[in-house]
Length: 178
Image (cartoon, rainbow, N blue to C red; front, side, top):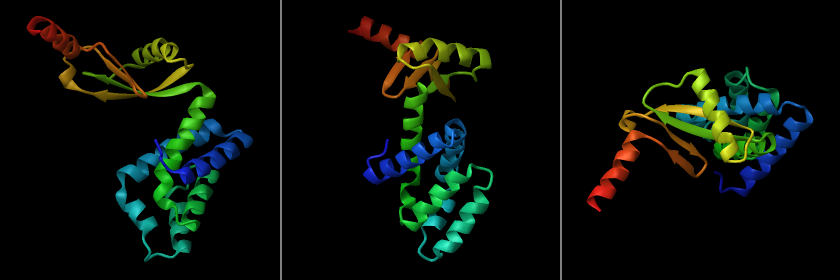
């Protein structure tokens, strides 16, 4: 989560604009993809943060790279470039997603399993655990972790629900050994 007050302000402004234009779902979805681009392609971030490029060139690059996302996202990134706050882009996105999730009754969850989840399993986990954390639904990311041996481990924010075999074996070991 962002520690920056500025990131929170930019995220709130973008969130309010998305709500006004009734594009909250679309903007949230696109921002998740934009976040992946910035996190996985450090070159894009470094290029946009480089003092060697003029702001005009940076904005043109943003327009080309993010041509398929909602225009208000492109404009928000351009504002961050103008304000010399492009280094805050990931924090702004995280704050926006937090605002959107709170409004829509959604929580992000990571489900660790030994094998990929089916759509049915994903839906059942979302339904069962969303109620436990007071949400309507969960946005589930499935991570494969062979060390679990079997079962699942679910992380929603700072809560962890662990019904994996490795966790149960560790508990049994603690009980037997003391």
